[in-house]
Image 1: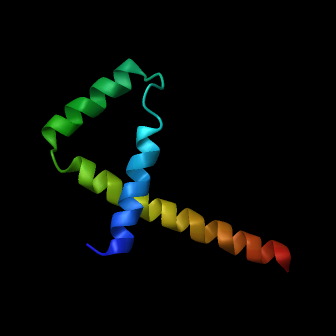
Image 2 (image 1 turned 45 degrees about the vertical axis):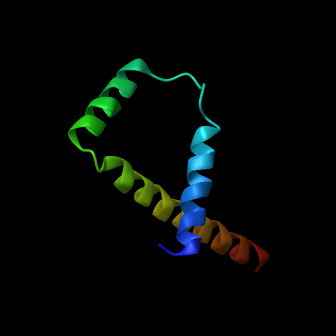
Image 3 (image 1 turned 90 degrees about the horizontal axis):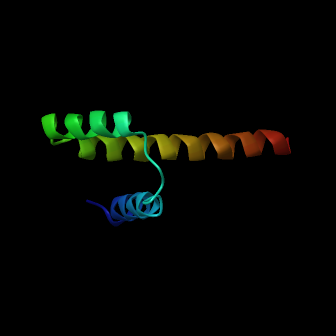
Length: 70
């Protein structure tokens, strides 16, 4: 793992920690817990997906800002 990847994962996990204590939908929580039990690697793939989506969103925001300047 590259240092930049480690930083991205650490930042994401810190963001998740800051949401603890927020109310959760009980049915959704149960479904997610069941899925995590059935698919132990799901958390890895979810983190990777979120990181890719965050990068895509950041790139899109930068592109929009460039276009607005023009």
